[in-house]
Image (cartoon, rainbow, N blue to C red; front, side):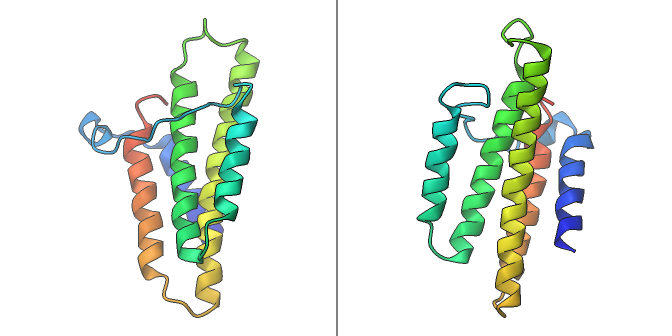
Length: 146
């Protein structure tokens, strides 16, 4: 079931047209380094270290959501990049696909962590709601550059 929720969320984010007023209500975080940048590998490495040292499933879910938002900001920045700045259309497409895959992965990690908590008998309704609200926020904030 959680894979269907994740897939539906990602499709809605990418395909849903939203009014301009809704777009302005949910700004994305600063994208930092984007795929294609030489130092991007170090950025993701340090994020992994930060996630490793995030303790507790609930904290990990929130961490994954933050990272998913950052990936979405990177995706939005890449989509808005002027073609003259890109090395080639193929490179730009690869970078966008990499950012999208990473976004999906982080959102999937959050859903998986909630599933683990639910299997352990923990109360997860609040976190499931938080994931749904974050996905809605992504919907509202991602459309300008896409």
